[in-house]
Image (tube, rainbow, N blue to C red; front, side):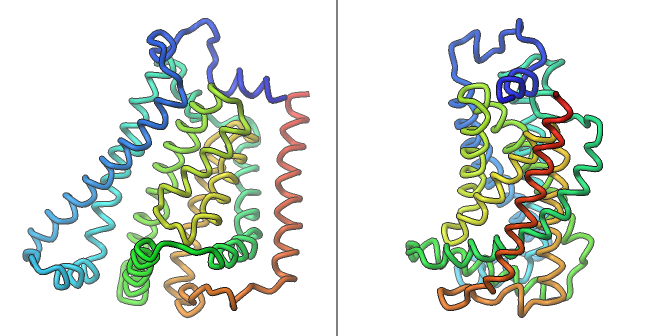
Length: 311
């Protein structure tokens, strides 16, 4: 089964030699270089756009404390800059960069931009999966809280969370927030990690290393060490969904529901959404067990459906 997926999902023309193959580059090495480049370009673009918008709005202070206050008060401008960087580099530039690994005609197949039969049905099932798995993700966050994290990373994440909490507690346009925090990342991050990175690593090392590594890289991309375990787990789950459905659409839907749900909970139930996770705040064990059982059943059901379709 693995061989079937490796040959058919990544490329549809086995006689075609990509630019990477013709020039002796490993697919995984190019993917790793592009992740680093895309991340830097995305961050620079996001910062430049946000600063430009703030200057147009009324200027920005040179004082570090005052600048932080301005950024907190203008988080909507940061969201615009963030979306611009993601669309340009995680999305569009990744689509062009994929040509180093695939023919022009095979690029969409490489990125898994396709909708096989029953994909919409399976996408609907992933919505149930993402909702069901939330107590497990909460439990993994609790485990992560037990691990020591360098103070610099902890302070940075606390600052980010405080800014987001203040924004969601304030008067914001929910539709725009969902666009910037849920829709854009769901499309662009999935294009990069489950479309491009996973396929590149799959060509080099096979599907299971590709699922695990793409998930870990996705977790590290968020630069939140105190939240790395749940983020990497979600990344691996999105990768599994992409592989087992042979389409990136279910992962996009799952990502959208996960981020969108966080925005909705943070907007309407901020006390629950931003409650501090400490070693003392373990989630109810019964909820975690039920979450694991339902999630495992859906994961197996998707596997079984895929097995029947290629039998």
